[in-house]
Length: 304
Image (cartoon, rainbow, N blue to C red; front, side, top):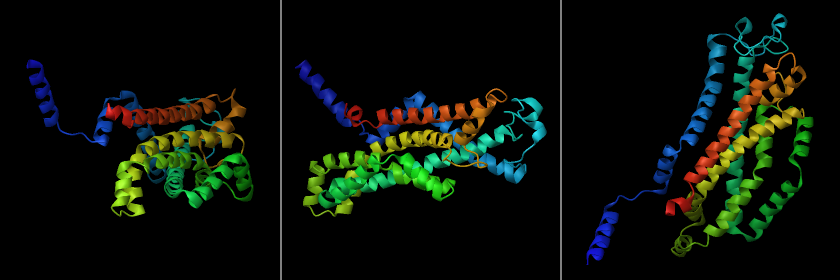
């Protein structure tokens, strides 16, 4: 009797406990994850600095990022009033890092969002409708997967000058393949669930099923994928700059600054380490945020 009474009390307590949504539970998990919060804070600080500091430099201090001063070549950090020294043309390394961060982060954020948007759209259509739609989209996925992206980028850079906008478009046009495959696989599984079959049975439209029943369940995967793609794009931009087909000087990016400094490793070692460290920290933070979001948005943890 005592055991049955205790079970009844536990059941009543569970019934009185307020229900928690999936997203509320995920936010509470992130709030307790110090590493993810720290990485998110670093990315936020970098982003705010790279967005607003150039405006201060241009409008308030009247500083030009491309202003050269040959007598001030290869100043070491802290020497001559330059916080992070100067490069081979006497340009302020601190200014160039801020401007370069704006370009690199713009590429990472915009290209990742456009990439994920294209991947989501095509993945939803391929997984939900199947048949001819799936065949056409899968053909495009397989075709792009078979062609190394570097060849297409080399062709594009030979035809057009690789500006920031064009670089974003190229990376987004070539980078949606992986996201599309992930979303397609999830949709193939989700569209056979009972709640989707029930919605279809009561006459719900395809758009309603896709956006109200399937997309919210794919959203956690999309959020995690976006952070990983953003980090990969920064590395990709740096790699392409190393090959000479990225954003061209004098427009600074962390990638082309690191590439240009390889010839001055002895006379200006700070030119190598400062953009390299920023790339390392930023990419690592993106990966840490993605890893934390993956844990927070894991449905298995929520069910437990």
